[in-house]
Image (cartoon, rainbow, N blue to C red; front, top):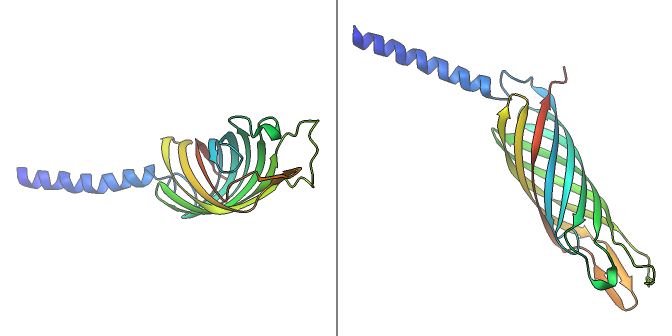
Length: 197
């Protein structure tokens, strides 16, 4: 009899634990198959400006089971001043579109990023050509998210970008690309899922 009781208890636990795990899954019983996400992240970027920069991003995404499509705005500011020829610290405003594949807490994305780099030019410096501030990058993102509460997640990610279109500044015989050929970017922030129904 005691053995039968133990077997019954083990079967009950085996059925209960998967059900609890499913309830804890945001793509399971908690959220519908399609829902929205709003997130905000702090950023650290290398290669997108003449020196490393810090910034902030805000994102809206449409999430479905196993995938998502997102639009994001980013603002970056260089950590230090640029070359003395170029005056004060650079800044950048960027728009980002990405499509992602999600597998439990891990996600991988393809990313297209476009925007402009602001390079303050001292009043006494004359450019020898047209200032071209535009920047376009393509790359990938990998990251993970961790549940804090039912309506709040912590999300971290790393991106690697190729920069086919780079801003250039020309002053006399001095010409300089304002970005590298490759850029990396890391982010950490909070995400809130929202039921669209």
